[in-house]
Amino acid sequence: MILFQLFISMLKIGAFAFGGGYAIIALLENEFVTKRGWIDHDEFMNVVAIAESTPGPIAINVATYIGYKLKGFLGATLATVGVCFPSFIIMYVVSLFYERFMEISLVMAAFRGVQICVIYLIASAAFKMLKKMKKTPRNIALFTVTFCGMTACTVFDFRISSIIFIFTAGVVGLSAFLINKKKKEAKK
Amino acid sequence: MIYLQLFLTFLKVGTFAFGGGYAMLSLIGDSVLAYGWMTEEELLNFVGVETVIPGPIAVNMATFIGYEQGGFLGALLATVGVVLPSFIIILIVAALIKNLMKYPAVNAFNTGMRPALGGLILATAATMGLKVFIGFEKVGSAVAFDWRTLVILAVVIAVPTVYKKLVKKEFSPILLIIVSAGLGMLFFA
Image 1 (cartoon, chains in turn orange, cyan):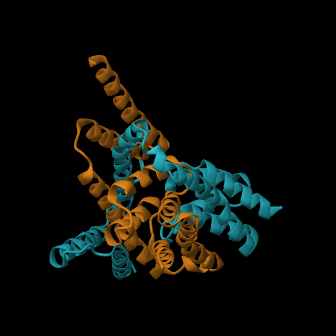
Image 2 (tube, each protein chain N blue to C red):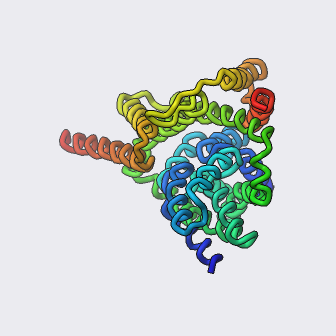
Image 3 (cartoon, one colour):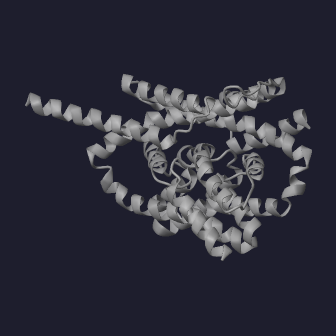
């Protein structure tokens, strides 16, 4: 039954996930952490970090991982197919009527409203993470530098892959850990 | 052999695109322009449409370009191609991760990554916000403010906040998207 439920949940998320990767993550968290409690917040954040640092669409990485965690290979397959299926069908139908679809002004008007909602959803996902983050100087610095860096890149039209920020932050975390370990060993 | 070409191109995109979402766009754009499957203008137009179609951007692009170049089979092959590398890599990672997380070094790396991830997500919202609310994309672009966007934003913030106060439960994001679509039609049509 959990397989069926997983597939339906993923279908639903795939059908309503406007605004790409991070918006889907907000939906996945709402469904699997808040509503169903199949995976706890800490593990979910780990999964997102893994999804960020492995290639491929983030949403698919997270879906595959959750599916695998719940029901192994079959779960992973169903979750991945489930989250992609609505996009595939919707995009396929849109492709058939692409030219005419673009000319419907009511459709475009609705989409302008949706864009605003998507910004709100993404921002609230970020604030939720900020609230749960331990407020150490290092964490605050990493958060601020990444936020300002990425925003500045877009504003000044300067391309840096987000993966560089993520990896640098990871290296900072790792270095801090290694330095601490060295210090402890020196004390002994 | 267009089918093979579609499959291999999107397999490559799926394998090398780190960061997902809009980070993927440049890689897809390069391949698509190189093969002449789309002009630059068509690509830009499509990205506009894409943002309002649900689902992962990579899947949408694969389906659309696959269909344009090779009909249903093309759409299917391109989509499977773009998803397959993720699927395999995550399966390998997920099978190993139980042991991997035991290593303090891996944990330390992850601890560093998390705050940066939060910063990235907020930056995404901020840059999208700049574009949608004041039409600002990059230095030098014209700024256009539209009060209607702020009205919709106010409603979109108020509805879940009030709902949470009254019902003590989270307002469904999906429902919120439907509400915002209605508001869009009301204000912009």
